[in-house]
Image 1 (cartoon, rainbow, N blue to C red):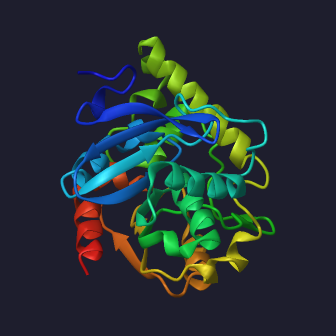
Image 2: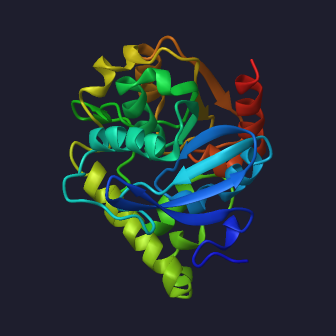
Length: 271
């Protein structure tokens, strides 16, 4: 059965989860140990291939962050720091004392904020192409300004494979209304949380030492969004993490190399 606006996620179920009075969209699939997946700029729909691969070994819980997809957003939630606390409430609502936590791009930032507050809630943390640290050094920009790029250019720079259907305005106008509505809500939410300071929390770097679980930071070898100095900043701020470069992958490793990323997560979780 096709889920409205989420055709590529037909292998699982979409439901609504009440989190202390805030109703959020929750995608669930698979069986096995629990895995909490925190999506990136492209919403849960952008990670369909990775979620399907992970569902072969885990019970995957993939909520849409407040303001994304069909999730409500209380006015009081306007910083990614807020989303860190909210994600802990999501885990409580799901009855997850701990889980493998995987975040991609914007979602990796959310995951890092979450685990600096309660590291014990994860058995393993995977941050793929994380954002969240200061994105510029004086006048030198280390992360491309996604708000200044056209949809076409952003789509082309995000991944090596064909860009998603929302990256080209000519294709966008032909999409079903539910799909367009999701894309627009996702764009609006990214602007709200990441406009200023641009895609970062200046305090995050001073808190990352609190993450005391096995951690992998993954980067696409051909990431056209994040520059090398930014990757080095993450290495310095999170020295306890393993770092891996994925060949033939751009910023959206989960789109370019979903099977390889999933296999790496399975192997790490089995240690």
